[in-house]
Image (cartoon, rainbow, N blue to C red; front, side, top):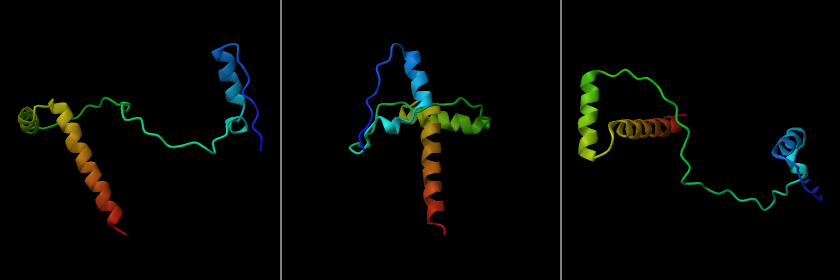
Length: 94
């Protein structure tokens, strides 16, 4: 099936309005599309409040200092590892 040519737009607003009312599959041939990775993109983050016992926070800061990383980064690393392990463990359970 021959794809329609994408029209030229006078402004970004015109283009936005056009794509809001048209299906891109009528204009784009995706048969040669390939998956690609964007390794330098930073994931979205959300700030949360987390209450920890002072002794745990002190211990985290000591470990972070030994590894020469900020303690908040260390918390993210530990959480990510634990979540990945948990997800891999639950996948194996029928």
